[in-house]
Image 1: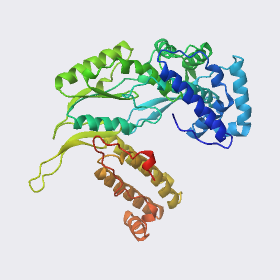
Image 2 (image 1 turned 180 degrees about the vertical axis):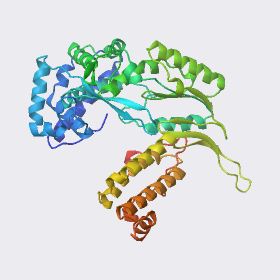
Image 3 (image 1 turned 120 degrees about the vertical axis):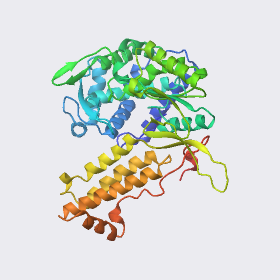
Length: 452
């Protein structure tokens, strides 16, 4: 199950109790796939569960909702006091979620903007408590082809499937993205999927209230009959619950499926199998009231010199090694940061070294750039990313030279001299040697017990 984070107000005993609850729910659901749980509301209201929910919300450090109450304001008000009020309201049936605040954030490397819904802190705590209780039940049912927003699973686990299957000869790829997935899921059919496992009416009432709350946009509340707002704590779990129906209906005869939330890839052996897989995929999504995004749906044949495809931030392409001393060339599926991912990195570095930040100390700017680059490289290091890393490192150097030159009202060469003669490049991160080349049929990272 997902890792627990210690808090001054949440001791080891409470953490162990929450773990024990989740493990018990998971084991019960796993032992009896047909069981429907009818006594969950009291578990949502448990004090240790509510504290755990607060810890998760606080750790995510999100913005305020439409009530403008921040996390810091909650701490000043008193977390225990707020949780007591929440539990009392929920026991008395008085708790009502308020509309989420709708904002639009840019998609990395694109001019498109993604809608994001920001619930109030109170509502986020309730959603987190529901997720703590419901997740282990549905996690017992989820299939290995699903990787997104699941405990102990990561994007690189899905990427490893592509590597393994291509090595086994599946060189026809069907790629697609579900159009407006979070916004398009029908509420009534989503609740039917939830009720396959949950029959506690109080919990179902809470979920319906969350789904029907709507969003505040341009001063008006919009309530719709579809969608689980992207940005809600429980939304990723509900998305997986609904798309589990897709996973169940998929058959291996159509190819190996890898799904990360609303991004899907199917690895096939032949063109005919790929065409059948695409038709089957489209039909299944239609049955669920969803549809593939036309601009991102296609069939790709992996071959040297042929097209590649993007999945989970990486660009994947079939390449061959160079022949040395009459040795046989090897072909394999390589991956490196996609154009969008690389552009996002450049955009972020440019923002951190912009003219508007000239008053910020150089040391602070370097720290900010390092924090971003470390995080970005930490994800993309598991790939054939050396060339991309060199380019991003060179771009960061160039931007810092320009920043230092402008700050001292000098040119770029002055900044370059400062960077070189500082002895340690002013502490600016260097990505040389940070890449780990993935291999087929090998774990992309060492087991926990072997890590230092």
